[in-house]
Length: 293
Image (cartoon, rainbow, N blue to C red; front, top):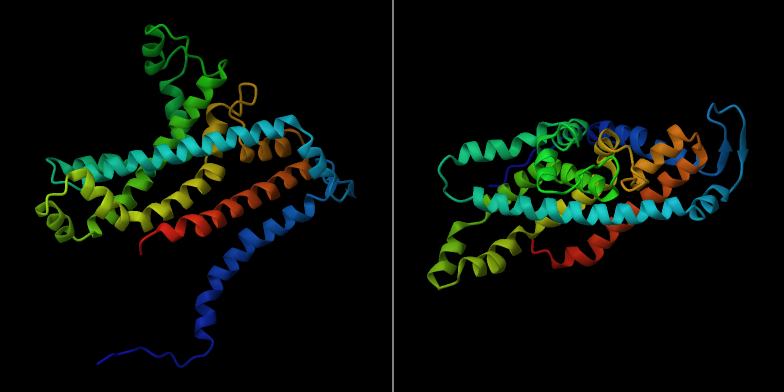
């Protein structure tokens, strides 16, 4: 017999939804609306004088070569960090799902980085790769390479990529491991009895069943790279050298906070929001239909 709980109060569903709706309105829709409105304004840093300029902030933005450089850096940065974080965490999760000696310690060590704040993660890697004091930097210099993320754009971008990837691996690892443990072992054992190799079992059985988790993590990782890596960039390179690590989200901050261009910064935030929404829509349109639920 199917037992169901029925609530007699008609206002209860709305009361349960109200806290989340209020939080969403206050911390997302209201700031987003303010950003859209402010992107049409030209005002000083103190907000004393304000002029409605329509699309002049957007026109100035697309005429700025530094903004297009930030777009290129962001696309490259997002692609490398997302692919690296997903691939490495999947490999680690596959090994953790096996019967290994000391598996509990192995899993705990992989989860620990998730508890580290983003800024702290950047500082840790900067300390290890600091040109004159970092132990890894000294090892690289001993090999004959002049490592210096303060002067070399490629070194700075590499350091930021490594920091951002390391920070996200543990989050992906948790979901991949949970997804692997939810797959019925009988399916894999049946394929093994039929003579399927380990690689064939993974790509024909395990990964298709893991595709919903992978799709979710793909979306989350892109959002992470576009927004949450700000702390790492600010702590490690501050967008330098020569704008080599200036992503779109960091340029919003630097132009608004340091440059005092509030209207231009708001216009950048609107464009960034639209880019992320478009990427998410593209994923649901062209990637989700390949997911096996």
